[in-house]
Every structure is written in C-alpha cells, then in structure tokens.
Length: 163
Ligand code: PNS
Image (cartoon, rainbow, N blue to C red; front, side, top):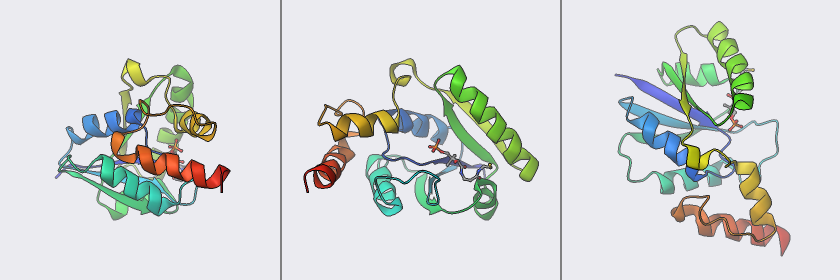
C-alpha cells in the first residue's frame, strides 16, 4: 500500500493546491492531506476550518483524506505509515527552500522520500498569501480558490474586516 502525505498550511486551499492534490492522488493508494496546526505564522483560518474547506474541495477524490497535525512532518508520516511526501514547486525560489526541508526531513526519517511536482503553469503565480491579500480588499478570488470554498473564504474576510 503506497501512502502519501501532502502537507501544508492551506490558509486557505487554492486551486493550485487542488491541482497538486489531484495529481498526487493518482500516484498513491491513499493520500493524506496534512494540515499544519502549529505554524510559525498565525493563520487566518483555524485548522478545523482549513480541514473542512479541503474536505469540501476534495470530496470527489476517493482516495484522499484530510487530517490536522502538530509537530514534525516526518513524525506524522511515520504515524500514518506514509513513505512519500508530496510538494509542489512553482519556481526556482521554492526549490531552494524545499530542497533544504526535504533533505532535513530525510535526515530525520530515511523511510520517507519527498516527491516534487512542477506546478501547472496556469497556477504558477498563485499562493494562499496572495489570495488572503486580494480577499482582504474585496478583490475577485473566484478563479483562485475551489468553488466549494469561495463563500467560506469571503465570509471569513467579511467578518474579520467588517465585523
Ligand atoms: O504550506 P506551507 O506553509 O509551505 O507548508 C509548510 C510545511 C507544513 C510543509 C512545513 O512547514 C512543515 O512540514 N512543518 C512541520 C514542521 C517540520 O516538520 N518542519 C521540517 C523540519 S525543519
């Protein structure tokens, strides 16, 4: 059984993430989306909200499940018997950071390998932080987040910035 993990902050999930999820899910029997709880960054959405949004956006993909995790990714991978970590690469700047993390993770647990997927070009410019910025100023994010989560994202920003 090939079990993969696609970890991230997903604050919020974008269609770029969804593209990586669909493609990663085809490579394994089971794909677990790992939503990081204890991020250094303070997220806009709680981990439960992020989990719910990913579940909504991925409900048609049969071999995908979503879980929140704390602590080290390699420990979460071990707990889940996963041996592949998937990460998407948008640009060379992503690669520098990701390579270092992948090597660190491998030094911590050599049973887990990191597989990199090249982001589809149409999503190369997308990031959760730009979605947050645009949503904050009421810009149109409908082509950036999965349709299933658009309302949740807009409502959250409405409640934060307009009470
Ligand atoms: O979506 P992000 O914020 O780029 O995802 C980063 C993530 C969650 C993959 C990374 O921060 C992570 O794995 N954090 C857990 C702590 C850990 O294992 N760090 C790696 C060793 S320094």
